Amino acid sequence: MASLISLSSSSSSSSSFFSPMKSLKRLASLKSTTKIILRCRRTLTVSSVRSPETEPPPAVQAFWKWLSDEKVVSAKTPAKPGVVQEGLGLIAQRDIGRNEVVLEVPKRFWINPDTVAASEIGKVCGGLKPWVSVALFLIKEKQRKDSPWRLYLDILPDCTDSTIYWSEEELSELQGAQLLSTTLGVKEYIQTEFERVEEEVILPHKQLFPSAISLNDFLWAFGILRSRAFSRLRGQNLVLIPLADLINHSQAISTEEYAWEIKGGGIFSRELLFSLRTPVSVKAGEQVLIQYDMEKSNAELALDYGFIESRPDRNAYTLTLEISESDPFFGDKLDIAESNGLGETAYFDIVLGRSLPPAMVPYLRLVALGGTDAFLLESIFRNSIWGHLELPVSRANEELICRVVRDACRSALSGYHTTVEEDEKLKEGGKLKPRMEIAVGIRAGEKKVLQQIDGIFEERELELDELEYYQDRRLKDLGLVGEQGDIIFWEPK
Figure 1 (cartoon, rainbow, N blue to C red):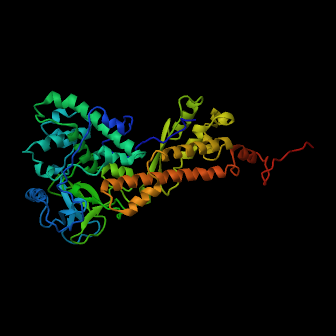
Figure 2: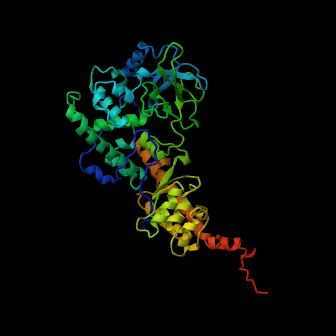
Figure 3: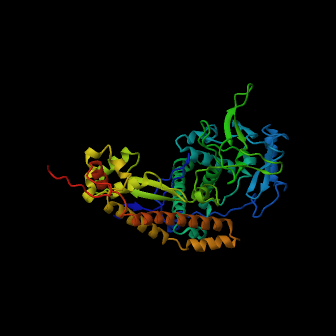
């Protein structure tokens, strides 16, 4: 039953512009083909807490002046860029009330696929994925000294603490973690997309791309989009909003409401506006913050933005279950799975401190179904089998899923080079560098979830003799079992 369960990496991260389909490889894969080496200059970030009143760098002041000259902002704008612990952020210039508009950015200052289409490279980007075309546009404009976007591009970081920018040594601290495989899969995906766009667009149109474009450039653009692009906007699945994208995240904010919206420019203007609001009241001099995404796990936050949270329910582990093609009942099981919204492979995100996903145990029982229990796969049970799978089928079936899940958890736990206790001790000691702090938090969180899963199925193993199985329920339904569980024998009159 080795194919019953797989604890290999799978990312449930939802993104409007990215979905890697390549197989995920181990750290050694970075040593083959083209090697990605990033050296980050963090001219606009700070390593220690600095007062929001610190004078912004010249590049930020120039950016603000540009927006002022273009009438996007004014002296009355409630917030403006400032130096904060995260690097750059939006600082309240006065007290701002909950749900109050912080700033508004007209559509002509957005960067999205429409921006690319209207640019000089638009004619060669029509067939590209939206994110690839925008990434290429960012790189092209960054290389142009006379770019109309120069003052915005100058304030963008060279990298973040996202795991896609980590060195091999830093990534080795994620040994055994799903995030490691996910990160390597993302980098492999980026490389594949770069090689394709280089062959199909960049090299055949050197007149449009006179300066060399490297894989590192493409990785930079991908990271910028991943960390700064707004999604879930009306008619906009991928858009950069200069100034608004300086807004930082706070785990203390527990709602995503009131953060942003797209609206009309008013009676005398047909231009759309991106309107950013604050979900909480903010005092003058404080940083305006929002909640990026309540549903993302720490692994997703680390991959997208380069930070994690201390909240336990940000820790998650993705369990991958599969119906083996070699299973003699493969067709029947697949039909049942698909009839219930699942498939040949199913991914279940287990969150620390929460119950197992409702469909996970029924799917496990389905995958493990066999032997004397196989009669449930007959067509006569097709409309009712999922209901049967929501309850224990047989002792053998329940024992099998417990054993396989527990073996898989123990195998996954053995892949880490530290224990939870060792990780907790490192966190308590403090003085960890940001990326090391992320690595320790991620691997500790994953291990806690694995221990939780193992504990759930260990408890289930101890209850095997007390559980009521299908045959017991069936006999009760037929009135052949008494209240004490004893079988009733009927004697002829």
